[in-house]
Image (cartoon, rainbow, N blue to C red):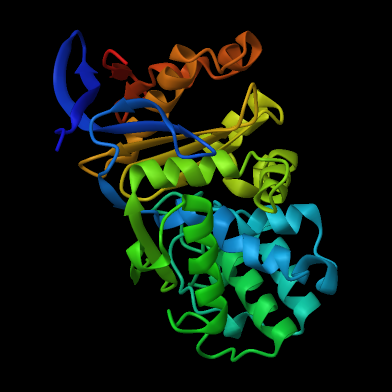
Length: 325
């Protein structure tokens, strides 16, 4: 089994202070591996990188049309959002359309990703609508309402809608459903474990215009602000690539990219130590190596190729730099 490879060096001044190792896989729709750094068979939990696929069964069962969900609302279902006011308002709008209150959301409450740790809300508590997974959970509830499925157990791995999701993931990943291991995510939804090469195949298929998953690609590229939010890499990347690609973070050092042309490709970066700071720069280095990033997009994303590091006074003290890709 190939060991993780050095992917990133972190500099303080001119000296290396730390390093991040991991794996990179690029695959096409058939599962053929186009690029491998490290071990393509390494198993990972998809975490929030699963969200576009978790939306597909609802799309295939006509849930967006049944409740009149807008494209921006559907983009939120694929999001790990900042919990900014427009994110929370969009989740609330979805729940209103399906006739449920926010009390039905079982994703829990956390400090929104877009709010500094020292900021305390006027009410003394954040809202479940600000949970970065509130859009995903709202769509799961909508699918249950439409199909008259139980609401209280909508997060159980044995719930009919969760079984739909797992079967869909197996189909998009070109692997038997029994080969997908299931755990519990931070938002309490089932979280899936599969080899990196299969996850790269999933992301290649999201860019296949003939498949339902391409609708998620379109939702995300049409409304990138919904997928992350202010200052988030996924959002800035999709704004820069202008409909040509999607980016989706997953917790514990996972970054996925789906590229539309010249052919659908999926790119997956996994940082072994789970540090998300290292993954975007590696993804961009891979895209540049493969000639999949336009000059205009690269210019827009300059700050992300070798992100600068700052101290508490805002002084540049170092950078994050990809190793040879």
